[in-house]
Length: 340
Ligand SMILES: NC(=O)c1ccc[n+]([C@@H]2O[C@H](COP(=O)([O-])OP(=O)(O)OC[C@H]3O[C@@H](n4cnc5c(N)ncnc54)[C@H](O)[C@@H]3O)[C@@H](O)[C@H]2O)c1
Image (tube, rainbow, N blue to C red; front, side, top):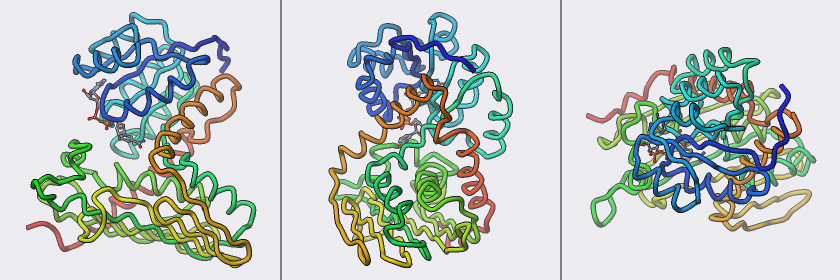
């Protein structure tokens, strides 16, 4: 599909919620190449507020009206997951390329239907930003360069006390993003989807062997803990242990990952990435900066690939592999210890 190398590209943003406070600085950094010229959200106050802060000219209450009234070169979708497919289809109807937030759709089947439906009509990149965090990019490079040899085992933990009430009785996990409490598919589809995708980026494709999801918090509609066990293509076991109600852990979870290789070990412990064995070393990252950089990197990759015609790293085909693993986790039997 040919793409006009206009300068700057005219971008439409769909959604003006929490996550767009990170999208918009990312677009701002690309201002010489792309500019957000319109924003659509049924919450007029949210859309107006983002428009005022980031100098967005046009504000709409529906994505359809935005598509009808503004000439766009690409669209950035940051609405809730249940609206992603309809907005991506609207863009495909006009042949407008799309960057769409994860999860692409509420189920694997809906995501597959969407990808089949838009094939050949437009370009789609999934906004899967975790793997673009600088420490994961660095770890990926080191693993590919053989710094720890062949990977034989890996384990990731994501533990927080976010669902344990704080001194004021609030649940920190739901203060930042209250909608997570209302999701039927919560921890895996909303949060661990990032870690599953990142492990695929680091270790290659995975197969799910065992999953146990559990639900205890009455404030959550969906699961709040998970244990997942995978294997790499070379049969190295890989596991994820996650729980949002762990006493003694911080309210906001930090990734802890151990990758054991034949020549060394790589350990990511929050902000510090450490290598031991044949090629030791250590680096501590600025976490808030890394968080913002992951959004900037996704947006820069989207714009660069639009201009060059190169494949997106997080293409629909790649992302469907992540969603297959997520769907398989939901198909597994639930942990019998559920909320009363
Ligand atoms: N990549 C990440 O790290 C990351 C982080 C947070 C959220 N997200 C994803 O971003 C998306 C939005 O999350 P959020 O935290 O901003 O949620 P949010 O609830 O804060 O905001 C959602 C916004 O979308 C608006 N909206 C609802 N229906 C709409 C529609 N049909 N068209 C346009 N706008 C509509 C709502 O009014 C609201 O302003 C979700 O898919 C979520 O999974 C990704």
